[in-house]
Structure formats: structure tokens, C-alpha cells
Image 1 (cartoon, rainbow, N blue to C red):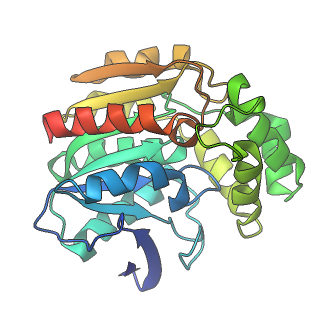
Image 2 (image 1 turned 180 degrees about the vertical axis):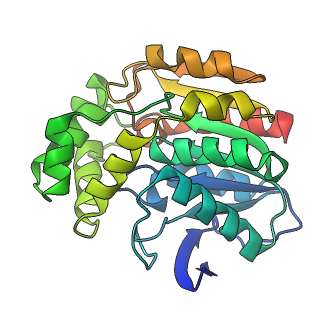
Length: 266
């Protein structure tokens, strides 16, 4: 589905069905350097079970035009503009990593627009190691290599996919390599600069799910505690052995957690 937001064309995967603004909607927001494809195992379920779905490509990512947005605040503004364009008054937001920060900020600033919030691989702040930030800003392939290694749990390093022959780490590398020059560095800096996570969390009014990976080395599950405490209505699920890329490492478990939560509260 093509959408024009602020005069720039953006793409969203709708899970194989048309988007109808009169149905309860779920908006999926990807992480740094990624695109809508990280949600392939989750979006179809919602689209075929009574909901409208938008798995978006943020500006400058995937199939969307424009320049990447340099701040989490800017991503929040874009997300609200997107909802206005498609005519969705209230949605459930599902965000991963950088996308989780953007969804969190949106729920804090626009509580009337967010019926439920699922934060995957999220901590109040996402500091980025200097070596990774420098490599990404220089478009050094080492940034891709570091993220692929750190973002996947040890089970995935050895294989472990439910579909024989699928190489998740190789796929993760190809996904990051597809990004335009400079995009990954801009995204990681936006994450590194964001320091308002706990303030935003205290303003969230909707039911919230923290979905964390037991083996996540980029946003360790233990670091999400302050976020859980700051959000008034929050529940937490930790997926065994999953790393930061839980949507592809543990797709069935991720979907089960998301649909049980969203179906119960929104």
C-alpha cells in the first residue's frame, strides 16, 4: 500500500488484505536500518483476523521515499501524520527497537491515538557502542557485521530456524545491506541521543506489553526493568533463547504474545 505523508511517498505492508480505517488497526514500526519485512511472520495473522494492518517502511527505508528522520521526536511526528492520512483515529502500536522508542514517544504524546502498545527489544535508552556508531556513520560494513552478530541469540548463530535451510543471520545481513548509504548511522544516532524514555513511559495511559529476548545483547532484558515500573499498565514476557531479532528468531512465540495481548486489550 502506498501512502503520501507530508508530500512524500511511503510504503506499508497490509498483511495481504486491504486497509480499512473502520476496523481496529495495528501499526508495526521497524528498528534501525530495517524495514517492514521483519514483521512478515506476524502481520498476516492480524490482517486475517478482523484487523487492519500497516507494517510501515519509515522514510528513507525499504520502499519508502524521503530522507531518514534523525530523531525519535521526528519519528513520532511522522507516525501521527501517517494516522491522519489513512484516517485511523486510534491504533495499537507494535514497535521494535528504534521503532519501540518511536511508538513509546507517540503513546506518551498522543494517548488518545494509541489503544495498546507493544514494545519489542525495548529499554528506556538504547545507547550505541562508539565503535558501532562510528562504523555506521562511515558506511563501514563492519557495522552490519556487528549488528548481525550482536542482534541474534546463540541459538540462531548455530542455526535453529523452524524452516530448514533458512539462514537468519545471512538474511539479517542482506536486510541491512539493502539500506541506502547513511541510513543506519542516522538511525543509530537517533537511538543513542534519545534520553526521554522514562519520562515518556510515565505518561503512557494504554495497556502495554514489553516483549523481550532472554539472549538479547543489544537491549538486554534486565535493562527493561525501569521501563516496566514507569508504565502504569504494563506486563512483560521474556522469550527464552531469543535475541534482539525475536520477530524472526522466535516468530511463532512473538505472534502468540502479540495477538493474545492485543486481542485482550484493544
